[in-house]
Length: 101
Image (cartoon, rainbow, N blue to C red; front, side, top):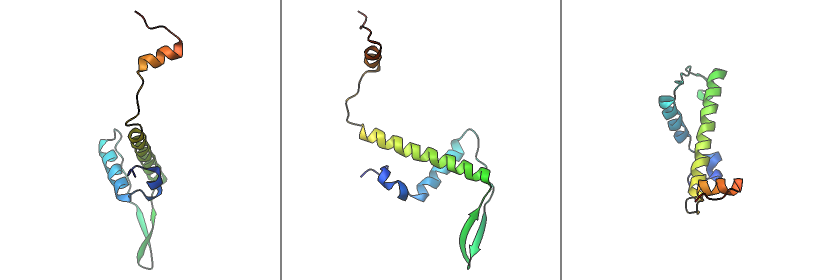
């Protein structure tokens, strides 16, 4: 099974997502500057994280991009050995044009 399978989506590795976010942060045109989150403890254990909504939206957008990337990789993998069609031929078929001689 492909590591990019949608069956693994709910269980995708958090560390990979964090690595992706870090890489995105480094390469993104608009640098992601997150405010340090507030961590709330319950019975001495870290229980909740509070962060500004703007930061949440930025993280959510990056995670969506990451999931799109996984979907793209999976699609490319499944189509790897499929025959391809020349774009010029597709355009001719759609427009009912004849091949110029």
